[in-house]
Figure 1 (cartoon, helix red, strand yellow):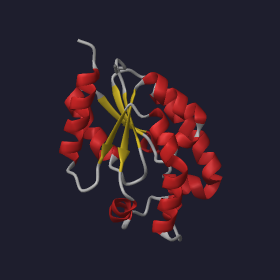
Figure 2 (figure 1 turned 120 degrees about the vertical axis):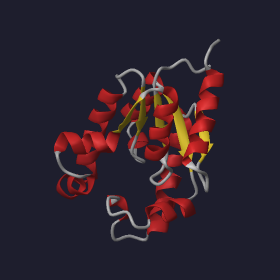
Figure 3 (figure 1 turned 90 degrees about the vertical axis):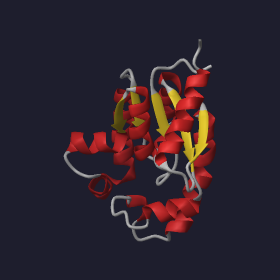
Figure 4 (figure 1 turned 90 degrees about the horizontal axis):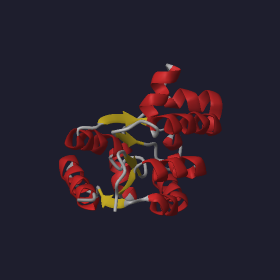
Amino acid sequence: MITKRNIFLIGPMGSGKTAVGRQLARLFHYTFHDSDADIEARTGVDIPFIFEQEGEAGFRLRERESIDRLTRLEGIVLATGGGAVIDPDNRRALAERGAVVYLITSVEQQIARTRHARHRPLLNDVDAERTLQQLMHCRAALYEEIADVTVSTDRRRVQLVAEEIHRALQQAQPS
């Protein structure tokens, strides 16, 4: 039974967390937040710049602070970065403070959705398919570990995915 007042979206890059999150927030009449956008707003620079200046470790520290702060709010939908689950503190905060929805998608779909994106530092100057496969191999069990609900986004419209999540979470609420 899911009785939590927040909804946290996890999953790999390109799974649709931001797009689905915005729609889900409308359906639940919650406020939408995106941890990457929050980091950019607080630092005044974009994520690739943070990676360039501070490396992934610096970014992950900022991400942990953002997730800790945002998950303490009430009545929100939060889209997290694809790597947020690698930090045990993030997994604990997400699992304890909200209903966690894992948006699962294939590597092929991720490639299609991220092909022209310039704001994905982990995909710069690398074999995108190989990198995405490696990331999924490392992170899939972590996503599954804290997920209350898992929904596939492959070749599906944002509205339909959001409606499926809405139904699943509504059915899980106590009467």
